[in-house]
Length: 258
Image 1 (tube, one colour):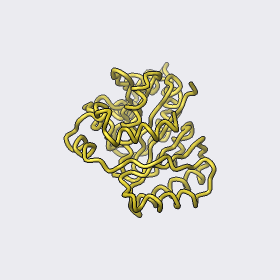
Image 2 (cartoon, one colour):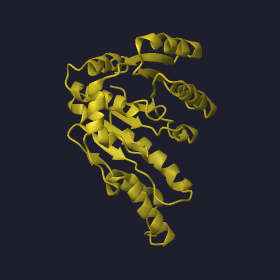
Image 3 (cartoon, helix red, strand yellow):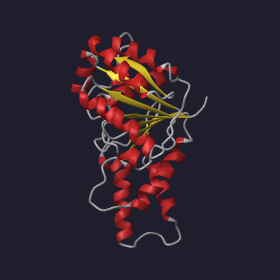
């Protein structure tokens, strides 16, 4: 199977992390892939929806904070390149679950620009994803990842929008920005989350008007009380019952990708 890197993006609160978790559940049940989940959102929501509590010390940001302090204190080994140190930190930050691995980026503490570290991190993450059949990337609510070209090796971009003007605006802006920074994806998929039947046609028209051959409407996920209860109670979405309507619909639309 061809290696794929699938990124989820969209305005905050539209359900992109929930969509990622449903896709992850679908992939696990296919049981044919080595899966890596990278949570690059500083708000770190993936652990919450899969029932995994992840402390700051387990995040890559923690390792980068330690590295920053070592650089400032000039206490790094003189015979070891910085990129090699960072690569080791990335692998030590991997959290092994039963059916997949997760890398939690976390929120970097303190201020200042660490462009060298960020540059090396992009390369290391690209290398890391080559060890897996499928990498799922939960992107921040903003557009920083795209403006910094950190999505350059992503094969599929899934933009999730809810039935709001802000959600649609963010969807369009992400598509525009990928062109501005020359990011190329094999596919850009649009998911409409929590759309009532009366507004589905409006999103269909919005996607049709984009007129790009690689941009397609993947489908709609229904507003689901069970999902809301799981998220509110911090329950593991990977344990969602098979016959739940939202999961049945999720499987239907994700089969289009894999």
